[in-house]
Length: 116
Image: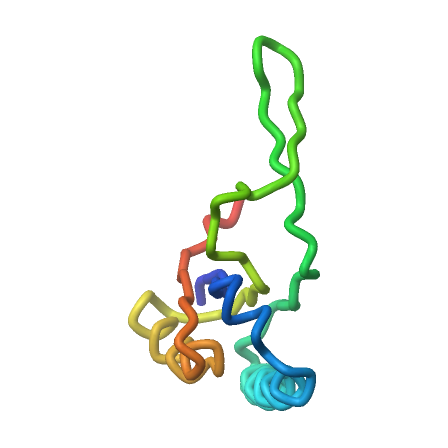
């Protein structure tokens, strides 16, 4: 089995328009799906990220520069992640297509993890 990371992207405007009851209902769906893949032995880890935009760090002329991130003009945010076990991309896609994130019109980026 290989590891794959599901990066859960969502539109900032959609996130801001969710009511507290809508958000709670969505989180229940994520917990159910997470429990299912955990019970099947497919979940390695996963979590929701905070609403804080985080920081972007880069080296500029040998000095580390840190800025608020991602970028002010960005309309999409990274809302969470999962790391799952799958035999290949096709298997990972079959598992990911049941993720509630897609039900709400959000985007899932799927990347294979290279174990070092």
